Image (spheres, rainbow, N blue to C red):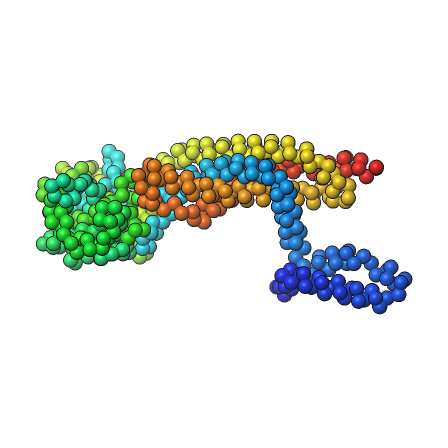
Length: 474
């Protein structure tokens, strides 16, 4: 460890220490006789030996290769620009595709403890459904010893205003929805189960942040005012955080208004959501959290007796064999085994684009290699080893790959936002900010592209010993 610190100190202060070494050697030579000076040796060679003994030689050589490679690329702006553009397109397509996969399947939602949130699916003999009858969800919540909490949501359309009404995307959620997910209000407050969940409680609503800005112009005076939802007077108690768009933000519609599901019959008197065990009439997306120490599989098993009890009590409304399957719910969507063929095909297509662009760029660099043949031959004739030349050429390829990856990352950032805005209607429902996974994939693809286009040209240029040998004979 002391040796490493010593080398690091020398590397950080190498200019000063080398200058001091040169002064010491000059002073020492002055004190020697002419015959002794001849035996003293070449000062440049001695400095190289000192660098090798005291410094981080491999790091210095790498930085030297990087500086030289940067100068070479700067001298060929046309080739460099073309290479970076081609790489940006080839890598950018792959990064853009992975950005959507990452945002939907691998990036946790901005909620409290997303890893413990469970998404429940109804499984029965005829198939499965993402919906669970709301009264069944309430039954599981009230009778299960394995569940710590249960929340539910459903989407519908309602009207806002009176007279010339406006249709709004509405989310009906349990009154503990926001508190369980750890979502705060941008303005006002969120639903409180003790206040807003009671059957005789006044009707309350929260506004989606984007709707609050577009429909009410961001006017804070709307909080605690009364609006009419489905022609029913409703008090606005708050505005949902701008960072939260629900537990399924990959949907095409962003929620404009949020209402307590316990007040569903107040807004739609004919609704059977609070009483029917038929999923077609009262289907909701059910989420929850198991108590600490209970795994998803163990929780499923603990809910099986309750599922059987529900089937016995409501055989006509529930499907035969209906029970719940638990899966990770803290993500925009669940990755399932049946998705693998589609993603495999997508990966193959995007990688094919990368290989095609890498191959074309490799041909371009092979053509450019003819211009550098004399330069490489001279370096070999002066004593440079083939490995040293190959390392320098590969470093230049890495520089191109790094610049192409950075350009691809920027291109992908704009592309995904444009695609989200085009397909989902509003940019921002999915968080497409690059995270560490996207950075790793981007620069890993850059390395793959470097291997595809860089090594053929590097091997051709470095394998010129016969030409170097002929140069030595002149």
